[in-house]
Length: 182
Image (cartoon, rainbow, N blue to C red):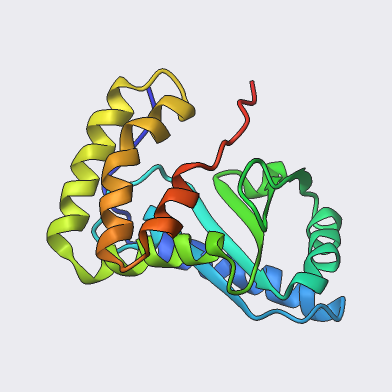
């Protein structure tokens, strides 16, 4: 079972705390940042979600290594791309439990995916509510996070289509193979 809860109005504040810490550390290290984005379901008001704040640190490709080094200094453990091109994942330190933080390349399809889902669901409350119900149902039935992701795939593809992503971009996103980690 995967925990999916009703929207929590404290989630944006939790993101802002993360954003501030990351921005300060990246600035102190001289790493140029394009944006720090709240993505994932907790970024959509009214949407049921796993209670985990997803954060994209958006940089130009030459700055990925420097941004990643800053996260390592903050206590993160690098995990690599994990099957998603131009998006680097990290295990968070205990003090930041309940967060997913990524370094992601500006203008990459991976970033477009995150922003398209967020923005489409913010704009379309009917689709947001339908997605929330799917998440709750699939979360209650899923044996692990991989089954949870697979169970949501059809509606995620519909969301990406509603957001205007091309057939080839949606196919590319659909083909990403996240390795199973136990």
